[in-house]
Length: 88
Image (cartoon, rainbow, N blue to C red):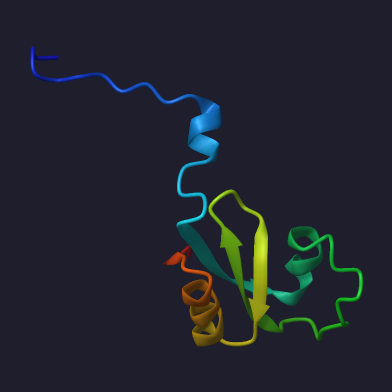
């Protein structure tokens, strides 16, 4: 490390809040995986196996919305003033 470089230390708690309120991630998911990711939705309808949906999650992993199309999930991110990123 040179004289002009500074080491930055980030705690796990700080890392957990990184991007909070500013970034959301989008992910295409199979209907079978939704119950585990959206446990607070007991009224979720039965979906045919293989049904693909797009999920939008906050930076901390909290689910925000489900959509049947990528564009709808993207619009949801923008409506909530969030910068969307995709996970593959």
